Length: 369
Image 1 (cartoon, rainbow, N blue to C red):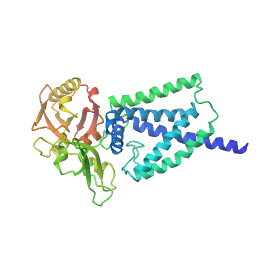
Image 2: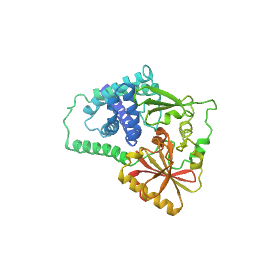
Image 3: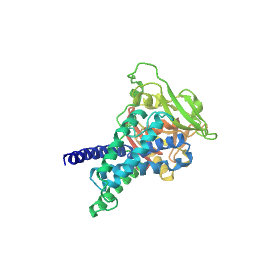
Image 4: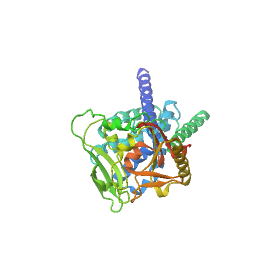
C-alpha cells in the first residue's frame, strides 16, 4: 500500500513537471510562429526535405499549439492516458532528434524554447533524457484507464485547449508575437546596442550562411562580402558567431542598411533625431494592395508631421534609390533578410524609431495612419 501511494505521488510530480515543460515550451514557440517556422525550415533543409518547407508555417502553429494543448491537458488531468502516450512518443522522437543534432548533424540551437531560452543540443538532449522517464512513469500510472472514454467536461476542456492554442498561434501570425524575446524589442536603442561591449573580450566573427537558389549549395559569407545581398541568387539559412558573447551583441551588430549604390547609410537612419518610420517590405513587387494603401497613408501622415520615412527591404533594389507607395517617393535601403526577420516577425510591417529607440512595431495589417 505504501509503495502504491508513493508511486502515485511520484507520478503526480512527473505529470506536473511534464505539464509545466510542455506549456512553457509550447507557449514560447506558438507566440512566435515566424521564428518557429524558420527553425522548422532549417531542420527540413538539414534532413533533405526542402519540398516540405512551404508548409513550415503550418507545422509551426500546429505542432507548437499541440504541445501547449498537451501541457494544459496534463495539468488539468484530461484524458491523461491518451496524452501520456503522445508524450512518450514525442519525447522518444525528440530525444533521438536532439542526439542527432548534437552528434551526426550538429546545429547550434534546437529551438525547444524558441528565442526565450537558448539551449545547446547536448543541453536539450539531457533535458529530454530526464523528461522521457517521467513520461513513461505517467503513462504507467494511468495505463489501466480507457483511452477514449471522454467525460462531457473533458470534451469541453479538450475543445477549449485546442481552440486557445491554435488561435494563439494564428493571432501572433497575423499580428506580432505577444512577447518579444528578440534583441530588437520595443525600448532598445539600436545604435547604443550596436556599440555595447561584449562580455567576452575575445575576438568574435559573424558568419552568414546562404543557400544558392539554383544549385542548392550552401556557402558561408562574412558581413563585409556583398555577394550574399543578391536575394535572387542566395537564400538565407543561418547566422553564426564564433564567440560566446551575449545574443544581443552579435545580432544587433549585424544591423546594416545600404542604398542602391552600395553606400552604408546605417548611422544616417538610426541616429536621425526625432521620429523615423521604417517600412519593412519583404518583396516590393508582391506587396499586397491593402498593405500598400496603409503604408501610403502613413507616408502622407509622416510628411504632414515632419517625420522621416524610409523603406527597408531585402529585395534587390536594382539601382532604384526610392520607392513610391502612392503618396510620394520614399528612400529605399537594402537590409539583410535575417536581420529584418529578427527585427520584425512579419512579411511586411512597420518599425518606429524615436531618437533611434524602437518605440513601436506593427504588422502591416495593424498600421493605422
